[in-house]
Image (cartoon, one colour):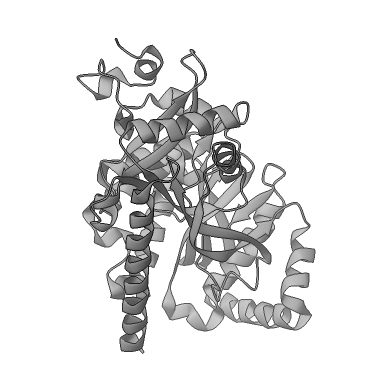
Length: 389
């Protein structure tokens, strides 16, 4: 028989065959209205799993296309209460073991969407869907370890006698935007550093008036996005070949996602100009009361004036002045040299291995394989860093 709740979350326009119930659903086949409604009720914000963003990623982004998702529904209703984008362990790391891994959304946060009105039911059903998909384990990458979504999953795992394992973790910078911006910056940087940054800004004004701009509307955001893409490609990311515009799939994804999120006031692009020159720009996503600082691009010809820092100072004031925003996730790496001294809030991000069955030897194999993979990856990263130096 057809699973009615499952079929109700399928977008008929995006798939020819929706009748067979499947434990994993292509993200392109999920009804976007159901997805948006769940995002509004999510117990923990994640701008990178908003439908407009993840659908664009899965459609074209390099190495991230064709993701599927585990879906959870409330009781016998058609209400979507949980969503977790996933790929196979084989696709993620070429490890031939039955496990599922977070589908990486081109942003370093993979906390699943879980309904705040039914968190334990949603977590229970997501784990059950993973089992029905044939997985023996889930590997959740880049999740907020103390976040509400992981807390719901931990409660269900504890109830079922299952214990997750943290594979790796780090501390990430965040902003408490409920504070006064000027006070926050003074406490974070100190009077001496702020004086030096003001001196640099005055020097920057020799190139024209320094203006901080925020593009929100679909009409504004298109040109602002193109400025950002050019700035990102002009710097070290362009030299390394990692700028978004350098890869057709990535460029298509970002040009699709940003305007779509602007339609629902969930994305803005901030730009710092000196005269007519855009010298720094960043993409900021918004989900509920949290902002997500996705990427930053700068014109390195103005590097002596610290354009990235100058933009981040203005962004900090902008977010702190916005009553709709309570916090901001830097989505940056550990010990990020630019953002860490400015945004002094901290929270733990990690990769978690979740067993789906008790006393399952396959989970030990998955753990051993991932430990070996991570060790080899870290060795390779150290070698690359040395070569670059």
